[in-house]
Structure formats: structure tokens, C-alpha cells
Length: 343
Image 1 (cartoon, rainbow, N blue to C red):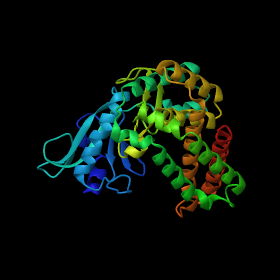
Image 2 (cartoon, rainbow, N blue to C red):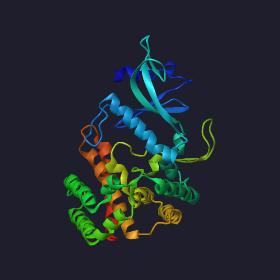
Image 3 (cartoon, rainbow, N blue to C red):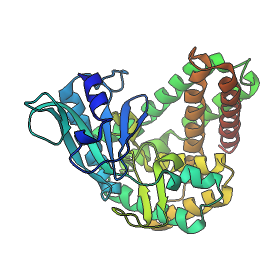
């Protein structure tokens, strides 16, 4: 059935609005259809352990979860969960009457040129932009869900387990791709910081600083729209918050902002990073724990290194692409190492 749905959604008559051109983009977990005015995002029927979209019921649930977590920070562009049905005539249609065969999250389509990662390459992101982003994130964090079930993800034990897994999954990069001595030095600094600051992690839990956050807050998930469109206004739109795994979305609020902070520095925009962080602490009235922020920036850079490094062992990635990947792995590692020296 999924193949029929994919084929149908590439045909304009399958939609309940006027569609002239359709573009399909795939991620490892989604099929994303761009129709000009709207985006329809369907979850792939996959199971990666930390997420399970293998049944229609589960895909519906996580579509609804995606709406819930993103409405809080990008409510204007998230429109709803649309049923995709097989009509009595046997046609596949969006938001029509018939047997439901799939679900899609419907969003307003914003211009790809307005994605922050693209604007950074053009040197077209300014202090006022990151200050506005900081305000949005601070407001989002202030009302984000918290509680006992969420707090456990920020515990000393859980964070140490995360780092242990990170080290186990990247040890094979040492030697050929990473300097082993620097790798071990980073590892020692991280573990020493955690052991020396166990009370700090426990205090963050007690004070309710562990919340259901965005979880994937980087420049590729932010639109900075300068001009109005038919369905949207100029402004900042932060999208694609993680809905499928609490272990990714639930964290210390500083771990959430650490992702974008690290990303800005990775892109050579240290001055924007400083403006973003300073503005966040101003708007949130949070304690400015720079050491803890550096710790989480180290974590974010290391995880990006790890995930990027996985592609070095993917047989479907050609050698030319792997040369670029090696460069990214090294750059993320060096950035993680820099943060580690500050701990």
C-alpha cells in the first residue's frame, strides 16, 4: 500500500487543493511532499529501536505527537494530521472519505532559501535574528513539559550512559580518522567533569531544568523568513522538534540551546553564537552556567561527529563523498575537543 500512496501523492489530483508541482524529499524516517503551498509529511514504516513506525496506528500516534510538540513553538505552520484514504472508487486521496490507509502531517510550505543553514552560507544571518530565536526558545522552554518521567533523562546516570555509548560507537574512528591521544584526552576530561560535578547534574534535576525540549535545535531546522508569502508572514519559524523518542527530546534546557550554539560556532559564526547565548540567558533569566553549557556543546559536537562518522562505513556512500565526510568528522571532533579543554 505504501507504494500506491507514494505514487498517488505525486499526482496533483490526489490533493484537496490546487496543486501544480510536487517535489518528493526523503529522510531516513519520512517521505516529504512539497506541493507549493503546503508540505505533507508521511512517516516511513520503519523500526530503528528508538522509534517504531511499523503500524498505521503507530504512525498516526506519532503524527499527532509531532503536531503536539511542534505546535508549542511553530504553531502557525503546523496545520494538522490529514488522513490519506482509499475512496470507494479505489483512488488514493488526501483528506477525503474512504478507508484510511495512511496519515500525513500537513504544514505550510516555507521557502527553502529561508532555511537558516542556507542563509549562514550566504552570510545573511544577523544578530537580531539570533536574538529573536533566543526569545522564542526561552519562551518555549518556560512552558515545556517537565516531571519525574522527563527528569530521568537529565540524570547523572543517564548522561553518563549516553557518553559511554558515544565512546563505544566511535572507538573505531580512532587511528585512521581521529587522533587517538586527543580522543582519550577528551574522554578523560568528559568523565572527570561528570564525576566532579555530579551534584550539579542532580541539582539541575531537582530544580526542574530537565524538560521536553526541541531536541534537534540547529540551523537546518529554523526558517528566517524576510518577506511575506501567500500563507505566511515574515518571521522566525523553528520546526521539526523530535516527537519519536524521549531520550532525544527530553534534556537539560542548556543541552537544547547547546546544539544551536555549537552549530553557529561550527559554521564560523562565533559572534552570532555569543549573541544567541547572551540573549537566551537574558530572556530566560536562567543561571549562566558556562561550564555546563560547554559540556553540552561538547556533547552535541561529539554526537554530530559520531552520526556523520557512521557514513564512512556505509557501502552506499562513494569515495568522493567519504572524503568530504572525513573532513566533517575531523572538524566536529576538533570542536568537541576545544569544548573539552574548557571543562
